[in-house]
Image 1 (cartoon, rainbow, N blue to C red):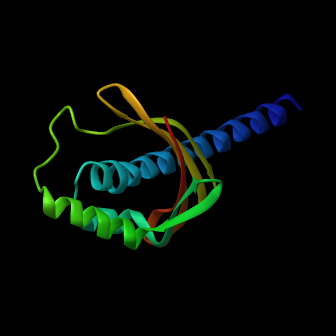
Image 2: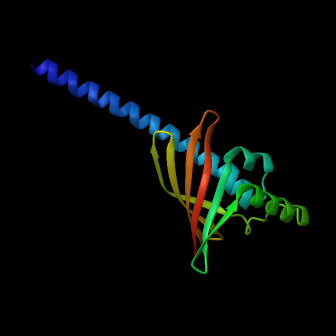
Image 3: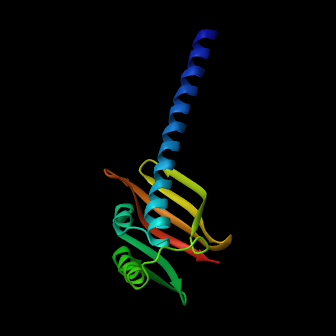
Length: 149
């Protein structure tokens, strides 16, 4: 009887460990997408291809303006980004760079949510809530809400 209980405990711990490893792997992949597409891409004048690879084409940035919900689709954000970059293609200086602090990543199956903070020169600019889905080609950012500090 003790062997059965011991074996059951070992199996439960092994399965739990594998599940934790899989979750950690997904969290790392999510951080890579956010860093590449959003932080390095949109915020720090990165490559448009990185942005397009990390954001789903149906992405919407949701905001509140005068008590009204606003939507800004990714194609409009990319157009705005390309326009700003064309006017000033100079890479951001160290003082201008946006950095990201990951406060929470919650993964359930193929759905995830990341709570992050965007900072410049140790000044908190935004708290963002990014929603992601995992598609065949990997994780994609599908929507965002935010708080401007």
